[in-house]
Image 1 (cartoon, rainbow, N blue to C red):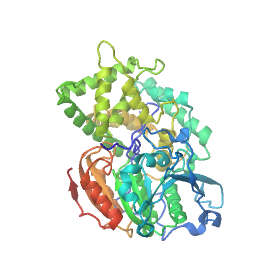
Image 2: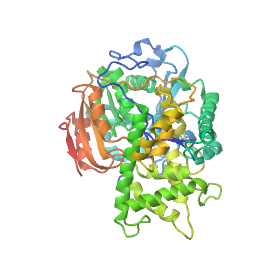
Image 3: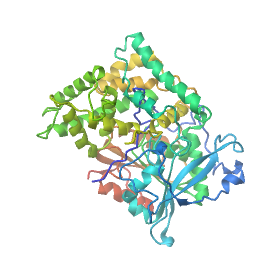
Image 4: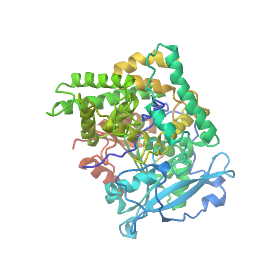
Length: 542
């Protein structure tokens, strides 16, 4: 059974519980449009000519990888790269902090690589991965999933990285671990959206987070845009010695790949975008789409659970949803004991654990067990749901946090110029509640996460028109909660006529290639290894 990536969260496809708020930043560009205001214009060839030779001519000093840093997080099952005989090696790529000032300050981007396992004569080049977020550490994630890409590994060097502001690449740290424990346990939404005092307390928490980020990371925050990371990727391609960039992006990684293709259409090689972000939506539309997506996934879980004799929610999906809603509402006023007396299960942590569990069917058994423990009338126990919530937030078993969620906010808010008000949220609450009785309200209030951010965002939507790029393969999954399936067609149109073909996987989960579908894996492998795209519109049902 394949294991779903822990990260793809997903901006512009992502859910983030920050200060009890879910941030869902929408992105988008007018389909086939000119660059959005503030967006970078396409670059013919590349923009490396303005860089000093110290950057363009740098020699990556590949060597043994050290232990993962706390800021990168942990991933159970990840092979330790420092083990004897490990095929993984690490290096740092130096990039401009500000791409508008290439002679100025620099920062280091953490890299990981494993050389192609097949004959050198068959090697195609490097295949660069971004697993999503934004905020996910590729240096930690790629070794964990290396076996999933063994067929591709024969002809490609597998390469990944911690993007700027993430993990070991100057990862954003706004609060310490104890402060983050308190932050993620805080109320999910105002108890009464009509009570100005409740709303003020909620928005004050968001403002305090923004203030802490500005105090600790103010010089870095303006330079964490997806555009800047796309330029880092092009420099990485050059330093790796590849004429064209071969790329595999998942979730937010699909947006990064599309923005990169917009900037450097002539430099793109074979590109796979899996769990595709819709680039045409506003932030609010993206949040609403995710509310519907998670509600769809929840309904599928409830139907599956109802068919089992031991389902703690009973045999009727509708009744199961009512029980679940009552559980969450009860936790608002009375947190539930867990194995750690200092960390009870709050409504926010349970909500996050539920969302985390819907990213893959592989998590459903843990969710069922956790709900059974929480609904035990004699001895309710929230331990499993809290652990699932911790996974959503990037909390390791030792109590330390990765930069996952802080980086998520910082990158989203650097990208998006939209700043919503309390009245915007109140006006749209009814449609969010209708979209999802469980997830809607939390996602609606999450629209305020960037409101007090100290940095102006780059543009309302990303620009992804990439006419002139080599054909790409886009993959959407019909039951994907985080990047709803409809976004795949929207991305295809936005990229431009003839730039992409679309593949549909019928099934559950966020991301298709590692989801167990032989049809999907064959199509992707044939494209990346032999350059043969599947028929546009191919549907994989296995």
